[in-house]
Image (cartoon, rainbow, N blue to C red; front, side):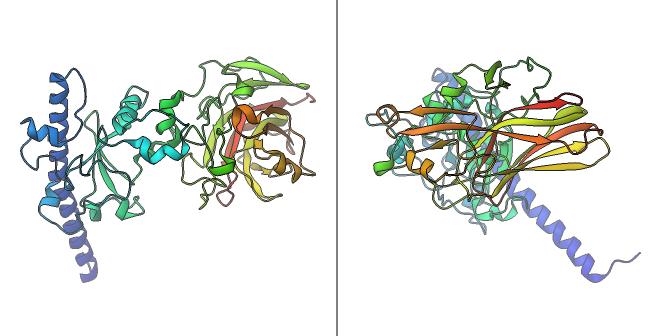
Length: 433
């Protein structure tokens, strides 16, 4: 069958574009791998240390001149661009402007840009120190070592902003496309905040739970969802939060967890199984002190097993940020064995609230539900007086005669609140709370 002329043109155009993409990426990939091999050769003769700059590979004879530069850039092909909108290793004391972005440069002092959020007298640290720490941790094979910002016109369609597309090579020599922030590609494994400078301040890495099943039957096993321990500021990547008169240590839940996970605690009449924390993303805002400044977590967690008939459930929760009173910040979605679903809304001010509050905020929370747990923090230790709080929500199952298979935890993408879940208990059929 003869194809219409328009279809023939489209097929030929697609074939041409595919050939352009393969050609552009093939040449660059070869150069990335050669540069990476030179880095490894450098390490073999320098006691495992990484070079300070890519230009050191050239001066040592491990690479030829322009050996750490994308061939596409050298050919001045359309779309080639060495510009980098973020902090870069390409500067006067680092590598030349046409070199690959080097993620292990010790000539790039990250602490200079973070000084506003660091304690007085905090030590300097470089990009190399941060990345070497990440390379010691689980999922090290995802970490970008070299990055290319050329031939972005052939980036895959899932890269929404082509001007931020990057081609990356890992410590294992694997190559992949990402946005400007490569970390966002892997947030199901490790949230963005656990890849940032907080790791230099003792933040624990994955897995974010103790490998221990719940100690009582009513507790849901949320291990596969857990993305933080809660004992550090899992939602904010620096040692200090805010600025000026409101500068303070970033709130966290160490007073609640006490760095003891995989255990049972009692709050009033209820028992809870503590084993990590499940954080979801909220709507990104323009003010980083009032809402998330970028996507650092996933929007939902799905498929926690229930597999029984239940009368209802209770769960322990909170939010990172505030939201308008009455706003739906997320849902627990219960899936029945017959394919039905029940959406349980989580409402700001009614069933949850921000997990930390200064006295002025508490004054504005008249009519809010009472916390299931709270803890007072003093101005002398945290720089601001505040209360930490956690909230309990209950749900009565309208269909107790139909088995529930799984439950999902979903954030409202139009709300800035960023809900989190600590523990959940089900009430088996025939039992009462």
